[in-house]
Length: 369
Ligand SMILES: NC(=O)c1ccc[n+]([C@@H]2O[C@H](COP(=O)([O-])OP(=O)(O)OC[C@H]3O[C@@H](n4cnc5c(N)ncnc54)[C@H](O)[C@@H]3O)[C@@H](O)[C@H]2O)c1
Image (cartoon, rainbow, N blue to C red; front, side, top):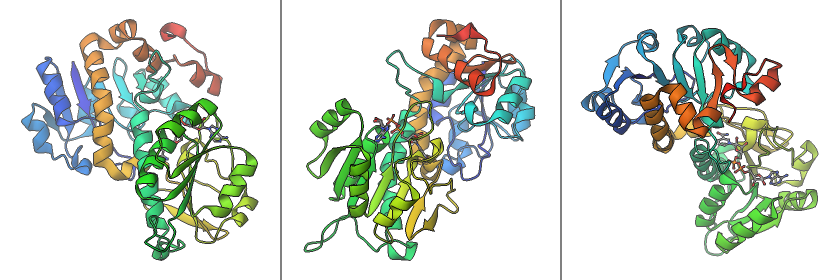
C-alpha cells in the first residue's frame, strides 16, 4: 500500500501524524511511504530523518493525495484539502464530523473512506486514540495556569508553589477523568493545595487512593463548586459527558465569587466549555478577561507542544496504521472491531450512527460493530 503523510495546514498546528520509526515499520512490511516536504518541521523532525528511514518526499499535497491509498493525518481535512480526497482512498485522522456539517458533506461527496481517531473504541469502551491528547492537555493546563497567574499576563501574581512563609495556590479541578487526574498529578508536584471534583463516586474513591495528600477529592455539586470558587486561584475545567455538550458548572454571576486576577483554564471548551463566559480561543491569542477573571479557552492545546504530542499520538496510532496497510480498510474492519467502529463515512455513505443522527442523514450499518 502507498501511505501518505501530509503537512498539517490548520493554524497553530505543529503535529505530524507519523514518526520516522513509523516509516521504518511500514517500509519493512513492504509498503511505500510518501511524506510531504516540511511535514515534520513543527515537531522538530526534519525531512532528512524521514528519507533516511525510507520515505519518499513529495513537494505538494496534490501529488501526495493523488498517489496515496491511505492518508494518515492529525486534524480534519480543511476546505483546501477537500478537493484532493478521492474515491477508494482511506483517510485516518481526527474528524469530529458531528461538529461540522460542511466537512461531513465534502467527505461524503469525495467518495473517500473516513476513519476517525476519536471513534476508534476498544471492546472495553475506551477511546485509545483520544487518551494521549487528554493526558497532554491535563498536564499542560497547570503549566499554562502557572503562566497566566503571573502579573504581566494579567494574573494575580501568584506562584503556584508559594515559598516558605507564604501559602501555595489553591487549584480547583472540575472533573477527575483523564484531563483532571493528569492536571492534579502535576499540580500536586507544584505543592499547590488542590480540590479535585467529580460526580462519579467510584472514580473519586480511586482518585482518593492514588493521589498525593495535597489533593482533596470532593463530590461535585453546586454548593461545593461555589465554595471552591471563593478559594481558587486557578480553576481547571475538565468535565465530559460523552457525546454531549459539556455541563455548565460556572455561571457568569459565579465569577464574582472569585478573586480578581484568578485564572480559568477551560479545557472542556472543545465540547462547548463548562463556564458560561468561555468562548474558543487560539494559541496566538489564548486569553481574555471577564469580570477580572482571566479565561484561557484554547481548543487544541496539544498543538502548542507539538513534539510531545506528536510522539504521544503516533505511539498509539501506528499499530492501527500497520493493520490497515496490511489488511486494507475492508479487511481491517472485518478483522478488528475497533477499526470498524472508527469508520464514519465510506463510499459516499455515513456509517456512524451518531453522525447520521446529528445531520439527519441516511445511516449505512455496514460497519456497525
Ligand atoms: N482543549 C483541548 O485541547 C482538549 C484536549 C484534550 C481533551 N479536551 C477535553 O477535555 C474534556 C475532558 O476530557 P477527559 O478525557 O478528561 O474526559 P473523561 O471522560 O476522562 O473525564 C471527564 C470526567 O468528568 C466527570 N464529570 C461529568 N460531569 C461532571 C460534573 N457535573 N462535575 C464534575 N465532574 C463531572 C466525569 O465523571 C468524568 O470523570 C473533554 O471535553 C475533552 O474533549 C480538550
